[in-house]
Each structure stands twice: as C-alpha cells, then as structure tokens.
Length: 274
Image (tube, rainbow, N blue to C red; front, top):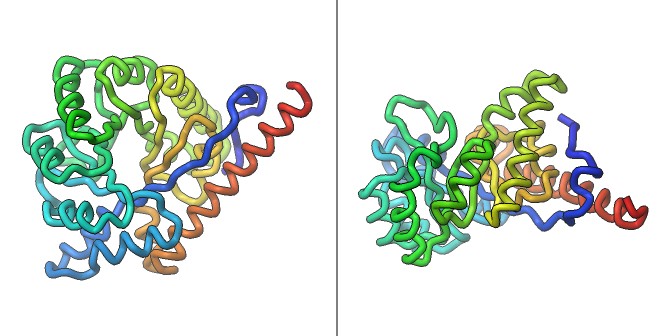
C-alpha cells in the first residue's frame, strides 16, 4: 500500500520520531496451548526490544485467555522496556494496575465472545464512569490512553475525561487496505489522518494499532501526529517463518522508512515555502 498523506495537508507539522510497541499476547496464546513456561514471554520481550521495539504491550483479559496476572508482574519487574498494560474498565483491572504500576495503561472495550478487540471504546457514552477511573490511574503515576475509533466525538470525549493519549483503532482501515487502492481504503485512511490531527489539536498524544502489517503500515506511519504504533498478532505470525527478531526489525525498518519520507517532504515544503 503506497498512498500517503499529502504534503499540503501536513506541511506545517514536522514529523516527530515514531515508537513501535510490540504486543506479546499471542506468545502467551502459544504457551497456553500446552501449558508450562514455553515460549517464555520475557525472552520474547527481550528479543523484541533488541530488534527495535520501544515498548511492550500486553492485554490482561477478564478471562485470562492469553496474558496471565503473573505475566504482567514479571514484565513490570523485568523493566526491559516501558510496559503498556491493556485493560478493560473494571474495578479488578484498576486494582491490578495500581498494584503493578506499569508505565502506561490503554483502556479497551472487552467482550468474552470476541476473538480479538473488535472496535474502539465508546468514551462519549461513559464520561461519568471513565473520568474518575482515569483520574485514579493518573494519580498512581500511570499514563492513560484510550483505544477509540477515529471519530471526532470520541476524540473530544477522550479529552474531556482526562486521558493522556488516544490509540486510533486501525482495524477498519486495514480491512479496506487489503482490497488495494480503493475508495474505501482512501476513506478509511482519511479518517486516520483526520483523527490524528484532531487528537493532537485536543492536546492528546496519538497512537494507532490493530491489524497493521508490512503492507499497510506505511500510510499510518506517515501521519505526522501519530507517535506510536502497537502491533502484535501479525509479527508473532511472521516470527514462525523468520524469527521474532527479524519480524520486529523489518517492521521497524518499514515504519522508519515511511517516517523518513515524511520528514523529507516536510523539508521540501519548508524550503519551497509551500
């Protein structure tokens, strides 16, 4: 996928560096298939960091289908990289987060029957619930992001409830990208671009993730307001064929290439006065 945001739309904002977060949930899925300790989550996290990951993401679900409580404790204690603790908005998860004190928490919607997270958190309908929940996490020294669809009302609500960041759900974009350079793809990319701009204007740090792979990540990494991508399932799958280190290193290179191209366009725009 080669489409990128236009220079004209983004010429004012120089692109900051972009971070890569690696989600290790499905390392745990493979381990849990047989029980025991292998493959080891800490070894996977260490390999990912050595290959270019900036942080590690792990989602502790209510049903503990992949990540377990001990995984969160071990990842936090090992301090291999900042831990992004994905969690539902429940008293149980709040207590665990405040006990383990990860670097960051990302609040996500969660349903037992879903295979994976299927959409963004409806922040706009939960302002009264989320405001004190987020305040408690922040008082504990934890940065808070909200996993949302790239919709103006959800971005504004995220600002209202006191979040530090938003993570734009890219699943719909990725599904559209699989069909090539179609009107649906361009529409969904435009939503990501506008969501990035609106989030930054609201004073929120902007992240993105869900379904990203080598072919579709470039346009998202080229959105200058987006400063972090969180990617997991695809890279764990690729690791079967090339090894986890190589899988992560290639994603790091693809993201960095897209970002470098954006910085080059920023420089050209400033020099030409556009």
